Length: 105
Image 1 (cartoon, rainbow, N blue to C red):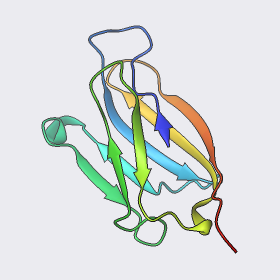
Image 2: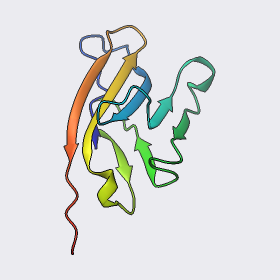
Image 3: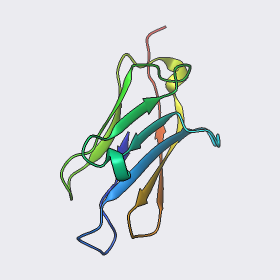
Image 4: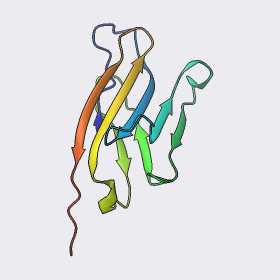
């Protein structure tokens, strides 16, 4: 699931917190936290019921695509995902992506 973490205008700015939500829920299912004390070693958290240990967020170098990768995708993973990016200085950005799972029956 792609998520743009490139700051809008400020080249010295960077993403400090990335959260993923599913199907309009107000509870995040995945968090990438690079705020303050976690800046050098970001903390990853995944909802055990939603994704468990199947997901990992890759924040690549600035101006490259970052994404949440879900291993062993299940049909229940299908849905509308929202990625929220909080920057150190720039306004928060929200983007949405629909995940369709195609499986054999």
